[in-house]
Image (cartoon, rainbow, N blue to C red; front, side, top):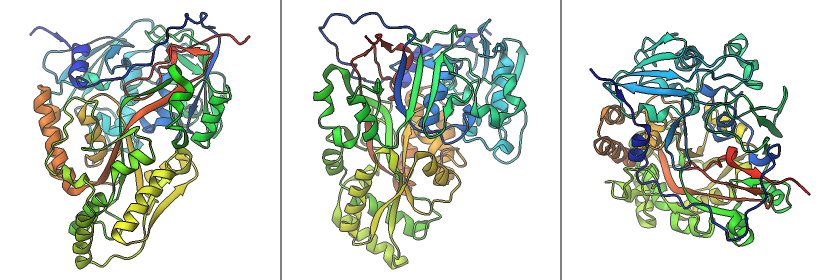
Length: 541
């Protein structure tokens, strides 16, 4: 049979068909002076939860760094369109077995060649049960993957020659190439396997940037990156490097931007949401992004399992006035949620049966809570855990106050000092409260908002939710070659989620950012992250 070349652009346009981004404002002022190719761009970030191993990083602090120092088979342009990076070609004849060719002459920053083995060995490590990688579920589609036993080498991955490997999936999945720009699929050099833990502290990548020097990652302070002159891919850095600073609060980062001590910021504190666009003018952005916000209530918490748990979750959801919170706390820069995904993703719907559980209804909330009390009387306090360095206190306080007032129970926030500490408590299951959750899409598809968070055993399923009907529908949807048919299955998944409410949907986020006077060409991507490699900076006078 004739080999069919997968049209990545076509897949992206289908998967991101509803993607509408408000571009950065334009100015009628004369063009700025040409950028200084050696200038370092300073930006905000957060301390990564773990050492920088691609398959064990599933949070935004580490992800921002990995996307800068690594290059995968593809990368995503600002609108979510995937474009070949390390891949020369990705081909299939049946959407089940893919032949992938790596571009010749690509190098890691230690001089090693990027080969087919660089990908296959990294993927096998990420998939193996014994390695307990947070992103292992990204490999579950590959033949041989197992959640029950350790598989050191997946039979579905085969190295053909130095630059070619094949991937055999358990079933046909036409959107498989769309996923390959996510960090879980990045390659690793042979040097990584000498001491993977040490490697994670000083990673060797193959992307547009590299660590400035050994020890460039100063924990809880910053990480310094410089341009990788040997990178040959399409994301050529137009600057000399990045300094990603880990601020304790969003207000501190914003103050540095105002004072000219920070170049680009991708999070605006609540205190400035109503004023930052007036202050920064055409150097401010507010645009739709594939980000979903919620809070998760694990079944293991007292009163939240079984029928009682379903009643209490629905009561809590009805007790929240999302319109009020998004208007008062976020100055209208958030939109109340109508589903578990994002309005910028094709297949999004506001009419999924059961979605009325997201409507504010104080009487219904009280009624449902009372029904749950008949099963087992409520005791204790309801708390939502969050990281204090991420600008979450205001909305957590507002939501818990609404719950307290509507249900007549004690409710409050439970802050952790840093994002890393908070995520560690969530990951190791030591947190004993509900906790705030959010999802910044890895690739533009409905499945990405559902499978990783609610599939049984999935690495970002922080509440340990499990429903066989959900698992079956996720599998059926993934196997569809028609996007509309796939999305119909994923909407059926959400019907079940609206009954079980493993997470309480809150609102969709926009990306709110700004930049200083010395930088130009600032563009924010479909997933809210600035395209740092495009940013230029004029030399200081």
